[in-house]
Image (cartoon, rainbow, N blue to C red; front, side, top):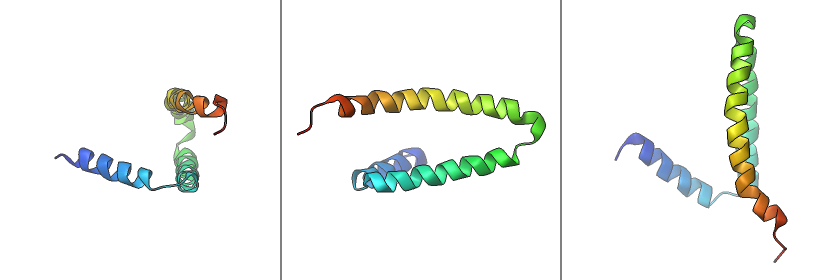
Length: 77
């Protein structure tokens, strides 16, 4: 089994036992890392880095919303 598959199986196991609070901490951590990386980009490359960030953000945000919106619109149990 390749390393990527091993990491994905372990990530699935972690996700199965995590709560929304754990994922919130992961998002805050990754957001802070993104800010730190953004601060280290030289001024002449900021437009390209910003474009790359937008191209990564928009499709992933759309996919997340697509999966989350049914939870918002469904009646409570």
